[in-house]
Image (cartoon, rainbow, N blue to C red; front, side):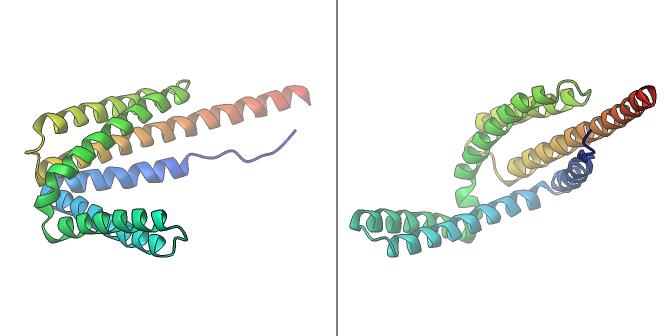
Length: 191
């Protein structure tokens, strides 16, 4: 019989606690959280634009060069616009965040069913449904959803994801312990 080590769920628990703390922080200061999200998105767009431009510069084909360099310039300019004036990109970021919440919610709902034997699966399912509701709320207020809406919605999403991961991790730990007890019991019977 293999004595392969099973995961203990500590990584899920640690991630859940970290997300819970970030979620509470975002809810305490939604404007700060919204600004942070804007600056992160702006920086990522700028870095991506520079990377695309450099890849285009080194492309061997003329069409690849023009296409990538143009995409790099547009992406970089969008990143600069968001970094220079974050409110300018608030409408676009709100739409992107709504789309993210849709995909995040669908992923969580689908993934929750793979945890179904564990009692914590309902928390993960609830987190997915909440992400879908947040997407709907953000889209409904678009384009007027500003820093506070982005900060609050990100905070709620982080909080619900953290709670659901903690629930799954604790359930996983108890299921592992029950499984170990059962294996030990069976070993005792066989010897």
